Image 1 (cartoon, helix red, strand yellow):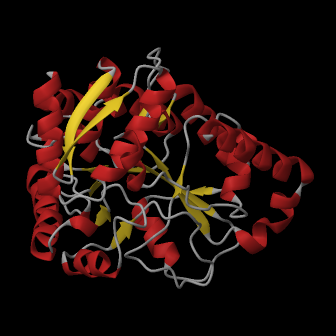
Image 2 (tube, one colour; image 1 turned 45 degrees about the horizontal axis):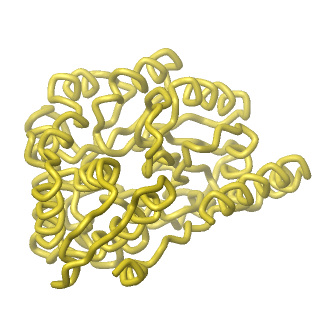
Length: 354
């Protein structure tokens, strides 16, 4: 079902491009410009089970995308410039701003050389706890647990549940269900749930988290590059909407303070962890403003408004699905003609697994 939806969506984007509809309506629907969100940049992996495949783009795709964005006469802006442009009525040329979430180790190896070669500005949003070795990437640990086991048991809502995931399709479905369920939990409950799973099935969550994170030396190198902006994504990357207000504010202020101290410079920009519309709202926007950020980006779909009325604490971003490699699809998405939030499987489906 997910594959079919993806294929139909891709067909729709291609049709919109070849019909000329997106190009015709671009001035009306494209806003002032768009902020693009990427996460991992790395070569294709051979692993058969990759539930987070949509978060990966290859260095080759990033290189092609930057080249074609230039040909489309878009202004490449830093997040500082994009935030400033968002406050005013649109100028004649639309802009694009490249952002990368997660602070992953592969950024330095694969993304940074491409960005440097093209000399384009970019923003990297970093959760500092992962650099310090205290962050827990539960989504990576969950992937390892499901990849290695055909039968999985855990306590869900105080009830012992058992899941069967022998086939690849069953593993993908189980990952979607458990990921959606964990996103409904408080950070403390997520820690208990993933700790239970890792303990039962011998997965080292600390190693998985540490191996994925950029280090302070590389981050300091990036901070010296005038094309780079280092933004905060809290300390521990919790779902802020499921976090108590005092703790959520501390996550924001501490993440900012750690970066400013370590990199000896201001940290003005913020990205909501996970960033979906169920991960932030008016309270989190107020807290981001209270924490002193100039802008906060989400993964709510859309383009920056052309009338200068974008909310600086909820700037939309176009999340690029790395399973798509068509630059025609990129043109349609940037036109603003589409951009609807993807539907996700509800956690209640876990009950079907007994």
